[in-house]
Image (cartoon, rainbow, N blue to C red; front, side, top):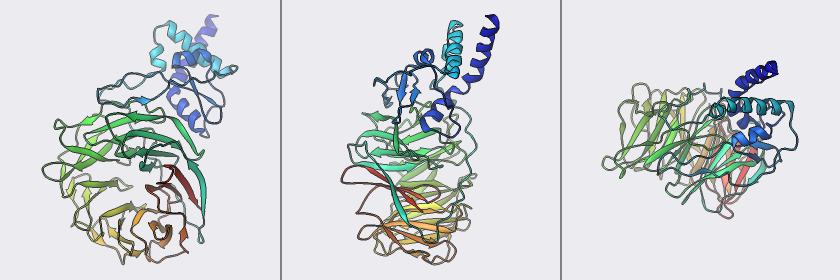
Length: 452
């Protein structure tokens, strides 16, 4: 019996480090997901189980009160879910280990969660960008229609690996996670009566979500949407410095900007682990900060502002110094930005205008690269480079949504355009340019498309 107890303790010690990953892997059906499900004893220790759309039970962590009075309530776990029928050997080991540890007074260690302190786990190295290409004669296929929002969509964002989609509503604090390969919702929504989630950023390892909401930025664990530590804020609550957020490629830095009074738009870099500011703010963004984008190598930060014809400024991240002159000429404001995979070129579109212009800029010198792309649409609302960097994909509106494909070297159109549907907003591409999400004004649904 003593030998069996020691074996269970050893097994539980090993599994303790896997518990957090196990929940994520089971929910998202990754290739490495274990085939079995923890048993009933573990369910009780973990706060019960949930059930995915395909019927697979998933352990859920107990809910805790918000860490500050301004915090959203987090994912709702009040729904009843059926229990697992039968226990696997792995489930018995997990359950037995949990019971042994609980008897020793350390059950909380099995389900350790962020306690809201200023420290957080060391970010993982960024995943390599997928090296994909756009076919010579591309076609478009609708993958799925994602329904679950009752209000007007405010934004959609893909994770860097394209496996998770985040969507928000424009007027209320309502955020949802979606499993892109399986075309389904992940868990319950994140809701707030105090904060509208104006922008979203996802870390390169896909485990952390940052939300921007005017006077604060908050961190959440994916897929549980549990709080991920202390929020970011400034003493002066009249300012709106967190309307736009973006993660650096290594996940260690969060850039945040918005509208500040006085002085226009200011961008601050924050250390994700310590929640402290990195250096002095980057100022001079008249009209406020509308877009933030790190280059894939993490050395350049592009900041767009809605002033005049739409201005983009390039910043050297290490020195926090401005690189070259402002990038101008984007009619009606900046529609979208995309870095080439090698970080040497930044594509910037105009949000309006009958030509649908996309200008390409050298990131080292802040000068134009060749002639602009002319998509002949009413602006370009989304654009992306293919994973191999050889093709640029643009999305604009003509009689419907129109996809165009451009040779990144010659700036010439390299395939016939594809028309999707009537006017839709918001829109977003995955990092490889192959998957597209479009919102709908009619039914508040999100449609996923695949370029093949």
